Image 1 (cartoon, rainbow, N blue to C red):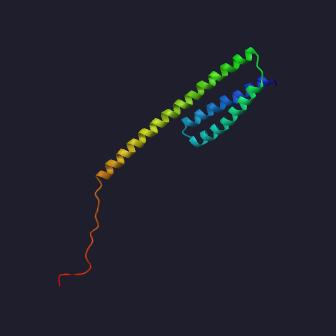
Image 2 (cartoon, rainbow, N blue to C red):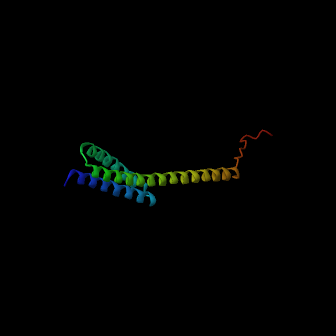
Image 3 (cartoon, rainbow, N blue to C red):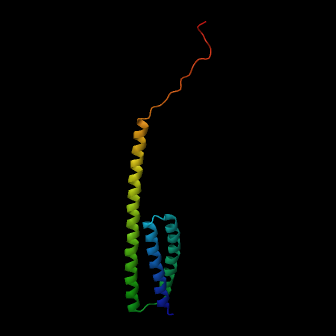
Length: 122
């Protein structure tokens, strides 16, 4: 296996991992998505070091650039999904806060009546 094929294999793993993360976010399985992102970070470092040490031909560079573009697009989809999720959660929190305010405004507070234990009218 040539060095270029090894780099392409790492890219393939990277793309598959990106797709898995996106699927986990859609399924709202954020815990596993975070674990996959941590692994993806390690893969990025490996890819960066490998690309730095390998000398590519002109054709190989073009292929790498095409793969990089595809990865950027996939990552942008994930970022957009997370931004959308963030705004949805923020809106739900605002709605919940409003409901709590409204319900607490109409809650009747029962005051405890305190009596005097000593009869002073004798």
